[in-house]
Length: 385
Image 1 (cartoon, helix red, strand yellow):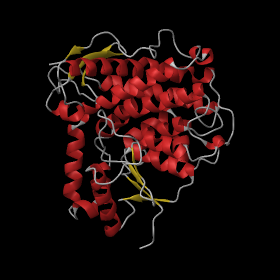
Image 2: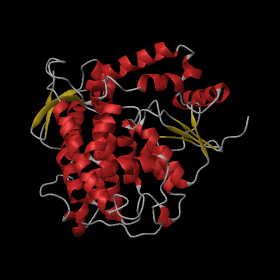
Image 3: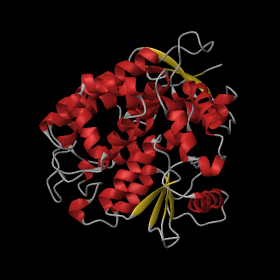
Image 4: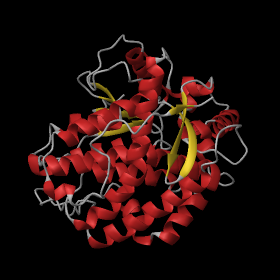
């Protein structure tokens, strides 16, 4: 068997996996995507490597595991010298340290770096909710996600692809409320969120359609982590979710073409060393982030801290399945009920600390009044039943 330089363990269904693939391509790594492109031996070799890493039997290269972290199913990046990495943003940071200054996806300029990381966090957290909703609600009748994941993981889960596809699709549909997609009257005490998610998605498409008409990348002439994050989430619906993709293309044809260019791995338009444009063109995107992402992160952190003070130790999906650590909040004037998430709490603390360490009148002028990025808590969240 030919030696593989790097392995990205992921699925075509994962927006975070798509993000890592694009980042590795930008970094010039020689890689293989498993298990989708692997044979039986390769698939099991790296399946077991992942299992040993999660079990603590292999050293983790990055990021450092903290109490608020947990391993995902995907993606992981495995290197030829025993490198073991997980988390798409942490992988970006690790790869970035090995790139020339003009090619780095996280800029050296503190203000530009903050904008890039804020956009990345918004797409990773709330963007995931929108595109997952697109797949299992908007494209519920025509998505091919179950068939695809069953085929990708056929070496691991056996040859019964039809059964695997059905099980996966039912699991993901069942998980929709955990990923913020709540249908009317589907869960007692949980306000519906479908209209909220779809209005946010359409608004983001409109913003990016305008922005990418003016420049090849979000911050100008140079590819950054912000582009990788947007690509990872929005490209999740390409090919696999026909209805959602058709809606995106109709509303944002330039954005759709941009996503497909990156989907083919083409980052050739990026100009190494080009100045990054932190200017008024970013105001609509930053305003949308402050409208949706900032209050969600504030409310989640407040709920997380309140539940921890009450002795709650279980959060995230494990808590949601037991209807624990719930809180009631509001986004864009619409109520919601959700579960407190430990990783979101960690992300928001980091964002606030980065903002408070930053002195940038230029960036301040691009944000809406009362943006709230400088505060961790937003009042007192009411614990849900």
